[in-house]
Image (cartoon, rainbow, N blue to C red):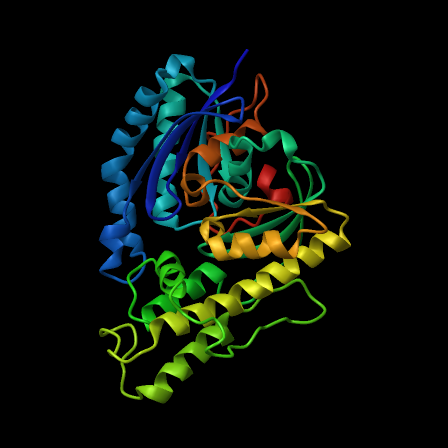
Amino acid sequence: MAIRILGIETSCDETAAAVVEDGRTLLSNVIASQIDVHAQYGGVFPEVASRIHIEAIHEVVKQALLKAHVTLDDIHAIAVTRGPGLAGSLLVGMNAAKGIALGAGLPLIGVNHLEGHIYAQWLTEHVDELRFPLIVLLVSGGHTELIVMKEHRDYHRLGGTIDDAVGEAFDKVGRLLGLPYPGGPHIEQAAKQGNAEAFNFPRSWLEGTWDFSFSGLKTSVLREIKKRYPDYNAGREPAPRGLPVPDLAASFQAAAIEVLIEKAVQAAEQNDAGQILVAGGVSANKALKQGLIDRAADSATVYSPPLALCTDNAAMIAAAAFQHYEPGIVSQLASDITPTWPLGPLATA
């Protein structure tokens, strides 16, 4: 019997719902984005995000069921992002999911958002090629982590960022360069016209660890701008006309992804992993993916989800929930949100 799970995701600024069958067949994936609203603030405004989630959640869930051509009678469980994320946003999704589960008599499964990003890959045509152990380079908006995945639901964290996540660094540098929010795709676009060797920005290797640091790189970009325009109020006014945005973007991007690439490949080699899975919003960056493929050509195969599944979505939440589902599963109706929920043993809590 096919198992259909309705997933709900509201961890940040995307209101999303999806229906997934057997953890790998996508029946629907509906996303209501708030990017245009938050762009005026240069980042996500938490109170605004939660308010918009409240307004959108009912219609998004309704559309997910309609597009999947199912009703709640055809659903076997409700999955919802429990954390990590913005507390107010998580509460909207959790309460909606609890109401649906209670009203329909269905079990509720709380899912770790980071685990969801990993299981987005199980919704692709390459799912049968995946072999454990594999290295996960998790690069979502607020997280940069390197993980050995030994089996389903078995994660060993090698290291992570000690300050800004790489996605946050892209957003902050984007603001410094006068680019729109979110910074990642706009920096990538600008970098295509720039020279990655124009500026020798630092690479923070943190030798002897698998950790990352991007705060110093961000500061180096700011210092380079201030050399030319000491009075430029970066992030609060348009970038000066003479600012070499493409070269700055290309040089910053090269410095950021070089460390990600090198550590991921070394982690694969040292852990006898023949595959590297890149997950999270920053995995949409083509330079990162191609750089990994080139660097790992002799040691590992690189996988990443398609663009629609890289950023926050509910399909990945439903796919991850399938790994926790079993007939007669005890519903988690009493569970609460967990805004700071690390990926690891607690992901099954």
